Length: 324
Ligand code: TXA
Ligand code: MG
Image 1 (cartoon, rainbow, N blue to C red):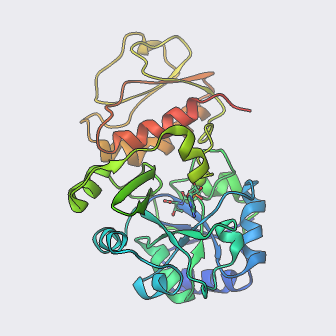
Image 2: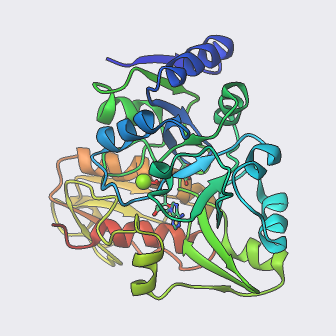
């Protein structure tokens, strides 16, 4: 069983234990501001294989490398001016940049799945302290079994991977609750590979240009982790519900009751006050609660496709996609 250390009450012990475990080539579950990550030494191929093993993740799927500061980033990737501007504005934070790997980077090719680019970000919160102390980048996907809902609490990680892990750091509920926004700069163009916890409108405001949305086919090749069915709860998922059928779990938005919801197994509201940030932070925990309610189907009410709503809808649509 995994040892769980609370970073708010025992930060020094948490740091020491994390660095020792990472140094042994073992993955550690760490809190980032987006979701909990399953982190391992990005320069150690055995450690990286253990991430893939624990997640049951297809090996062709590259991992994001997490750095503590710009010096660490610069040791591994080459910034173009626009990517640097984005990083300076939004790091530490929920933005991943896809950048060319430097030839002398010590990040192992297993982390990048052999690509000549690296997904890289500087996370906020306690995970950044861990990286700083450990002194080299950590490869970290979300700390969940491949295809399942990402964890936004230490308890989520424990329930899914507690038997396989040595150590989980607990910093409470993830502040943002959605994985990072992933973009790739190509010449003058910024391309969105995955909507996420950083609002694309904020990127557009800073860069003074539109961010190009992916066509779905291209995205599948560009970010191989973006499999259609992802974030899958056990229950079936119904989108844009305007009423509720008996025995369904309802996850709605905006505080307005839906016809029939008195017969729902459970009713959860992502944000009664229509705040998309609050909705993002609640999404994965509510999906898990709805799933645990025993309902055969989770019905989602209508969620506005603006701001963080884009990333929320992306995750819900993946949860609803046909499974293998
Ligand atoms: O917020 C996050 O991004 C979380 C926390 C733990 O940092 N991490 C996360 O990692 O969501 P993961 O592994 O679940 O998703 C990484 C995504 C995948 O879709 C992968 O294909 C894409 O990033 N990716 C990684 N490296 C890439 C690269 N070189 N080129 C294109 N896509 C890449
Ligand atoms: Mg994931």
